[in-house]
Structures are given as C-alpha cells and as structure tokens.
Length: 278
Image (cartoon, rainbow, N blue to C red; front, side):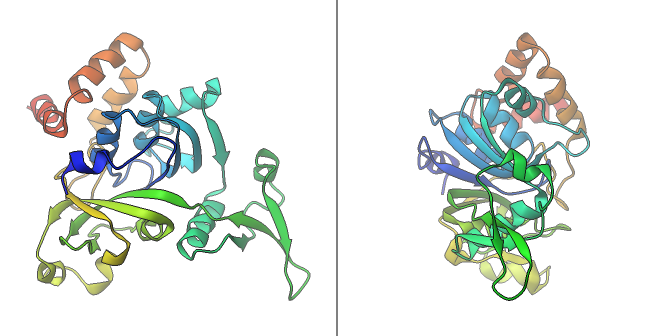
C-alpha cells in the first residue's frame, strides 16, 4: 500500500505500538506520515527514540508507555524530555524486562505475565496500578505485568514480500515480531518489497521475523528508518541526529528544521536529506 493510504487508517485516541529500539530501525517514514495528519490523543507504546519525540512535539500524544526513550548515542530525546518534564503527557514508565513481558502477554492474548523484573523497586511506586501475584505452586510473588495491547503496530524491516512476510538482515530483531502479534493491525514498512522466493536467497530462514498473518499492510519506503539506523542497509545518521537535537533547543531553529524536513511529503524529506548531504 502507499504511505498516504496507511496514514488515513490511523484515528485519534488509538493505541499505537512502534517497533525498533531507541534510534535503531524505527519506522520513521510511517511516523512522518502521522505528523502530516490530524490525529491526536494517541497512546504510544515503544522502546522509544525520535519516533516518540516527534509525535510529542507535534501534540499528538496523550500517553506514552515505555521502557526508555533514548537516541542511543545521545542519551535523551529532547522533545520527549520536554513533554515529560512539563507534564503535558501521561506516562507509564516500566523496567525494560517488564515492558517486554507486557509485549509477550499481548502477543499471546493473555491479560498479564508474571515477572520478577520491578520487584522491590520504585517502578511499583511510580505505577500504583500495578499488582503483584502469588504463585500457586510455591511461595514466590511476582509483578503481574499487564499486556501492552495495541490497536495498531508500526514496524520497519529490511525486506518484505507483498503478502507481508517481513525479513530483518541486521543484528537484532528488536521485538518487532511481538509488536506485530500484539496489535489488532500491523503496518510493515521496508527498504524493499521483493518476490517471496528472494527472501531466502541471501539470508537464512530465521531472518524471516514477521509472518504475513499478522500484517495488514506493506509499504515500500527506501531509507524509511532515517535518521535512525537500518543495518546493514545504512547506519544511523549521526550528523542529522545532532542537528535534530540542536534544533529542538530553540523555537525558531525548530521551525526552520520542521519547514525543511517535516512539512512536506516523504519524497520532499528524502530530497532535503540528499541536498544536505551534498
């Protein structure tokens, strides 16, 4: 499907899971498409990076459930930090182990999973709605991590076929398969759509991360993870990321950045990135 056709399927108030990790293999073209819509009041579930920051800056977020929001080589996303410190968004801040347990519970269509992660920590203090559960087999007590169910999941992979089988070629799956399974609908953007038989031509079977049965739409978006990484196709654009962070410090600088990169379509974004590189 086309990028524009994906964007009109997202409605205000939805819970949207965003795959990837920090500033690595984020579905940034899909996020940029959302920035061009009127959606608002979203709940975002993410091991977050600039995806979360950009949506917060655009005023589209009501709540974020996260294990962290980081740019990796830069510790904090500036827009998320501003939203978090101002209290303009609601937050559910979890230990990373708890967050993954929540993804696994949602993927399995169960209401929670028990985990030791978070026990005897301030995570329970910060999330008073969390409960503990006693084991029926021994004297152990666990955190009952609720399922992180989603209306929609957005993920980006290296390759896919038109049926929705998704393949990653980099070093880490980043739990993208769990996002796909945890959502009612999943949109998979990829660097390239290839014939099914090509998926195994250059990579092993285990690289087929996402099964077609979990995918609603496939969108071919070359450099669709920019400015985050999509190894081995490209690394994170560190210079662009520093430009993003610097622009966020002052309103006029951010307005110029947004005018250059964010207020047109994806083709205009990619063209502006190319012009900057040259």
